[in-house]
Image 1: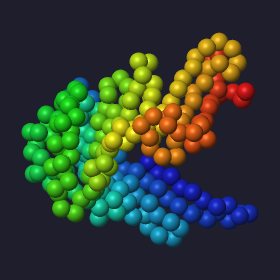
Image 2 (image 1 turned 180 degrees about the vertical axis):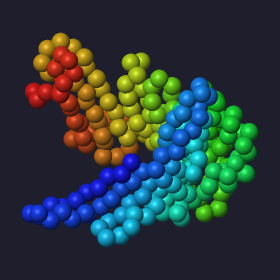
Image 3 (image 1 turned 180 degrees about the horizontal axis):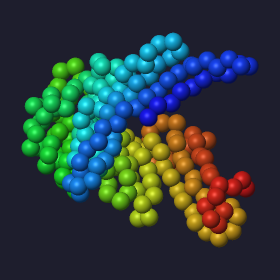
Image 4 (image 1 turned 45 degrees about the vertical axis):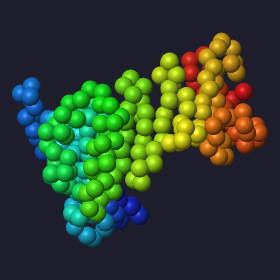
Length: 231
């Protein structure tokens, strides 16, 4: 699959950029062939397109487990939740390096795990940070809701909490201080349905400890079929 961007000036057409994606075919367990990206090429006017991105390997669900940028930098992904959610991204490491550190059987078990514990995921992240020259980030999820925790390269993390209707309710730092909080209303009548967000200018234990002007409140109103409206 290729794509070109050109500039037209009168009767003269000048090629500006060129993209090309090469796909590989793979035989699935159902006996059918699936196609997935293998390499991406990019070039500018007058220069032969060069390989910019290579998909080195995939997991059993067809998600990339390792990519290589510009033939130099490797980025690997660890998957879980039945191999459908990425729980770690390791920049500067190949997937084979990760296998040698964590263990192939551990990665296989983690990938098939439907709902891994937070302690299991944090243990994996700790091992990954021991890979020399690499940078690791992580995430965990609450099934049917969304991301429950994001862990940065330094080990600091942000937690996400939801209400009983699967709506994001609050975002907190590792000390359970509020970064953002959300309130919802769903009632008949114009102006009665809204999403209100609070983004305090500093992380706090409770919004009531801050003056209203420091809570940085933003409200989006909706009509009866959830289209944004101005009130």
